[in-house]
Length: 114
Image 1 (cartoon, rainbow, N blue to C red):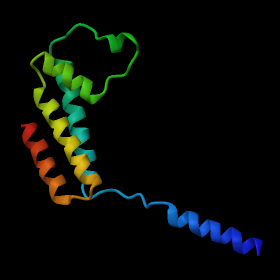
Image 2 (image 1 turned 90 degrees about the horizontal axis):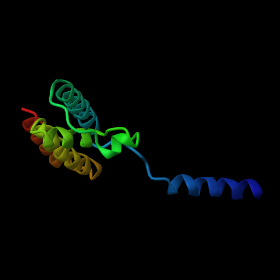
Image 3 (image 1 turned 120 degrees about the vertical axis):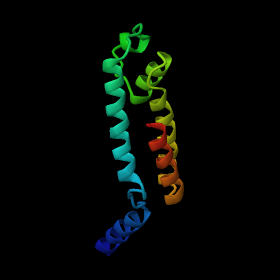
């Protein structure tokens, strides 16, 4: 009886766990994120310098969004800020399993990076 009860609980727990799987565009989003990151690093390395931010003084690591914002403030890298915004939309569509919406957002990211 005890074994039956334990197996019942295990079965119930398995049914309660939602399957975690990648959306229709997850790989393409990852590749695009890597492309944006590389572009941001390149733009930051060759561009102007700016005053150090408060976050940097507090030993906070820069994020792609913070680097893109800093580059945009220097009138450089505005395209990366736009691309990150559109990539965020692609992620949202991907999580909703909206393949068409995700692909459209990724096309916009590619356009932003031109």
